[in-house]
Image (tube, rainbow, N blue to C red; front, side, top):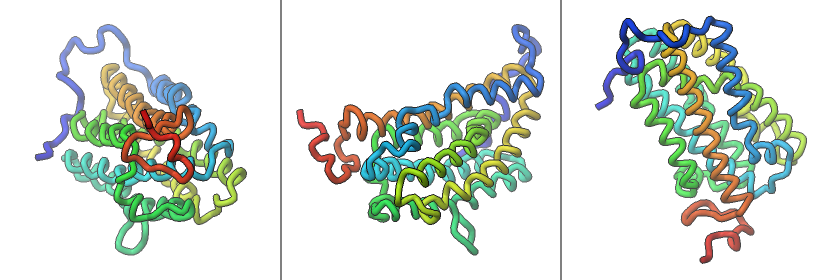
Amino acid sequence: MIMPAPFYPGAKSPMVNQKKEKMDREEFIKALIKLGKDRYHSLHPFHKLLHAGKLSFEQVQAWALNRFYYQWSIPRKDLTLMARINDVDLRLEWRSRVIDHEGDIDGSGGISRYLQLCETLKLDINYVKSCKGLLPATKFAVDAYVNFVENKSLIEAIASSLTEIYAPAIHQERIAGLSKHYEWADDYALAYFKKRIGQARKDVEFGREWVINNAITRDDQEAVLNAVKFKTEVLWAQLDGLYYAYVDPGFIPPGAFVPEGFEERKWSK
């Protein structure tokens, strides 16, 4: 049974924050931005290869297939969070994120647009949706994110989504890089990322202000920063798995997706 989330992590006491003063708004925002500059997955070697056009068609296939599990799990994460929120107004605000990804009765959502990328990359859509070819690192990292939201305090769970602060820039970089270097990267294939730029900015405005307003102590602020750090590690771990399996050394785990021409690079001894 999913229980309502405690608002703050740990017990509060009159002695809290004796060691460090609470950051003011500007300092807190700077600390959040610095996390992105230091830790966001746009810095990962795999992303640099992707955006520079240095990955093969088959390597991009592997990226798209594994990333689908992350996209598919975002509504799982958000619905888990909503089930733990007692504030009706906050639930109503958060519900738009699920609709953005899954769509509503009158239109398609982000997951459908993301599958356009998989279709363009000539992946079997039923295979992609089955999630049978995932790297273990992908599954463990994404599931850890859902589990984090299910078990942490409300402010930590909401803060874990604040990597949205950095997302519009990486989407713009990705659109420019893929469009420049890959013939297949047309408007149809990149529809998810183009639509997501505006959605991410909207989500950032709400999520950032909610966290800033509700992190009332230095301990709360540190918990927020640690939650964002955790999320950057979730994203980084996924790219670690992709790089190891499909770039260098190129060992694909048993049961994971094997692109055409990669058979000889599976574990053999």
